Amino acid sequence: MSKLLELLERDCRQTTAQLAAQAGMTEDEVRAEIARLEREGVLLGYQAVIDWDRTRREAVTALIEVKITPQSINGYDRIAERIYQYEEVESMYLMSGAFDLTVIISGRTLREVAQFVSERLAPIQGVTGTATHFILKKYKEKHLVFRPQEPQEREYIFV
Image (cartoon, rainbow, N blue to C red; front, side, top):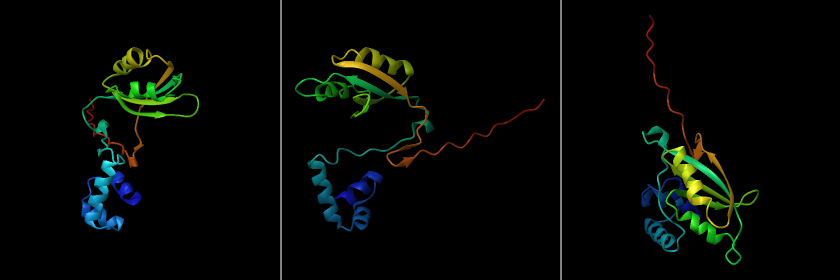
């Protein structure tokens, strides 16, 4: 199972024949295992990793550190659930250390991200502090390296 999951994580576009050959399984076993993993909630979805900097889409990604006072019965879960319901939230993690949650969001502009923090995140009961860090450049994500773009040729005119 773990070999199949690793193969899917690296490239989920592979055919069942390719997966079977690499995992030492039959195609029928691969199909059955994938169906079981989906039913059990182990496989949550399939996504492409996109280098948005190579497109015309303007976007800002931010990592937000959130300090919270946990709820008595559900600990951090109730506040976390409230936060991850927002469409802007791409990823969220419970952390150890100086802050409690890491929230990763994307917006069209710095102002949009700032508004999310000030108008939606900070007012939540139990949130005691936030620190926002803007991602300036991605080097690697999900085991994939983001290659730098080739510099554009420039035309110089000397007068």
